[in-house]
Amino acid sequence: MSVNNQSDTDNPPLTPFRQNVQDQPEAIERFLGYASSKNSIAPLPELFSASRVIISGMGSSHFTTYPIYTALIKAGVSVWWVDSSQLLTLLPEIITPGTMLWLTSQSGESVETLQIIDRISKETYVVGVTNNVHSALANRANTLIELNSGDEATVSTKSYLNSVLVARIVAGEISKNRLMVMSMLERTGDEVRRYLDNNDRSIKEFSKFG
Image (tube, rainbow, N blue to C red; front, side):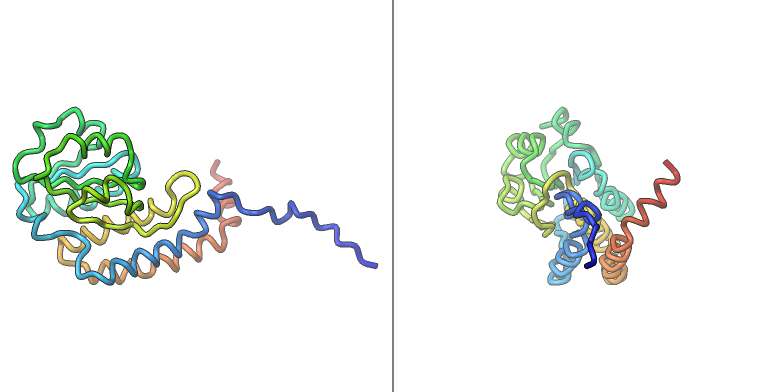
């Protein structure tokens, strides 16, 4: 009689975080499907007619928006790129008439985001990028960009990548290169999936440099 000595620990179940990481390709495809259903995810007329655009967020949510900032500079738009904690110290003086406020928050309920929303006037045009369509940010946004990342167990994984996609697509729309950008990004899900399929090997390779 053969005996199977393989322990269940040889193939341990994925932690919630690792499961979120493994689900990234599906989240990417879901967002790209959402973006493809629209001619534009950015309110381009309002962006180009705004007297000033302020792009803000906290941590990684903020850093993902840098391509939007540089694209607007190149397009000749007056734009500020400032994280939400700093922005709070500049309110209300920085929000001048005709200002557009671009806020990115995975939860749409971060403390800084809530305080900003509470302190700006009803006339301020807000673009909200969030994974929570029922959040305060989503409810306040004049234009809502949904990350379509699904639930996340711990820190942002799927929503971080989808925020990067938002920035790349919006930058492409501003520079009139949307089709080229979308074509490039459509390969992203497959590339991430291919990488994750060899995740354990990749971790071992990176550990050599630790």
